[in-house]
Length: 172
Image (cartoon, rainbow, N blue to C red; front, side, top):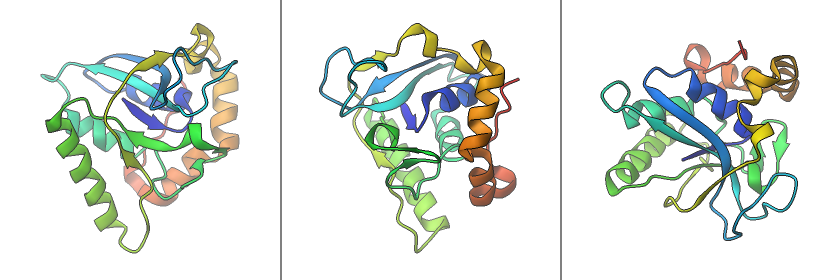
């Protein structure tokens, strides 16, 4: 489970990764049962649930992709989306994943010394898929997705932070 602001953008990034077998947008990290986008999802993060073939892609590679898709220094959300549901976080499911997530966060902090990394590493809990019209948004609404992503400044900020390592997605 990965929370990197808008789940549309995170879903698109992981869907392009070889070895990823499924990506579902939804909510996690809160106590409310059955949260919905159009109703109440207070306390939850917008997140994606990623399933993958570990023979093709490693959890470490999924972590690396996560970091290249977020701004770890924004404590108020991600890009133009502000508020608690847009915060960034990693939700490892096992002790081994937790160790790798913590190490990856430490590596980002070391790379950008002097800047506070606000991305949290929290234990995985219940995941609630969002309504169907939010799933695969970049594929169902490519023009709107591209406009949103550009207007939000996501790719521009990722390029500023990560340079040639920045993960960008055009919605193609």
